Every structure is written in structure tokens, then in C-alpha cells.
Image (cartoon, rainbow, N blue to C red; front, side):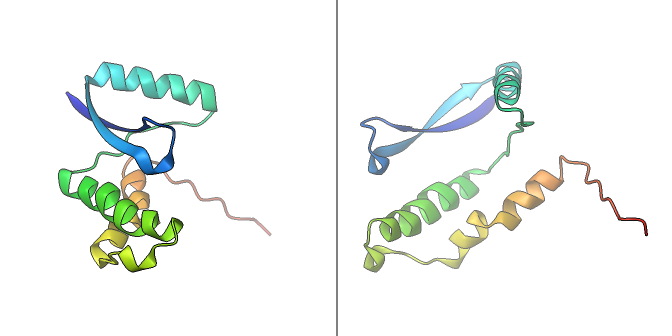
Length: 109
């Protein structure tokens, strides 16, 4: 069983986005990602996050830094360095690199 997290704006307003957990089996998740891959032309793969990583990513960086900044409320920001570690491209790059064959090309002179 896979935990799938989806954000849904019930009222259509960005400030009302909530996080939902939906249980999907491996086959359903693979089918969903395959369909998305066909429709977009990209190879979509899941990035599994622990409960702690979800807390820091969604409820930490997104809710306690991005939301206040984008709504002109910098005094309400909580700039916890642990949140940045979760939000950084390096975190996701490491996860993606585990599942990807990197191919380098070098020009021949």
C-alpha cells in the first residue's frame, strides 16, 4: 500500500490548499503515473517522503515560509534551517539520482 499525498484547493483559493492522504496500491499508482507520463511526454516517478520530511516540506517550508512571504507577511515567517534542507533542489536531486541513469556527453575535438 502506498500513501499518496495530494493538495486540493476546496474553494479555489491558494490559501485554502489542504493535504489529503489517499491509499493507493502499487498497481494503481503505477497506472496513474504511466497515464501522466503519456499525457505530458515526461517520465513521472514517485518521490517517497517520510512523515518527518512531509512535515518539514509541506507544513514547514511551504506553510511557515512561502505562504507568509507571498502574502506580504514576513513577520510571520519561521525561517527554520531544517525546512530549507527539505525544500532544496539538492534533496530532490539525491532522490531522483537514486532512480536515474545519468548519461554524460563530452564534445570530441
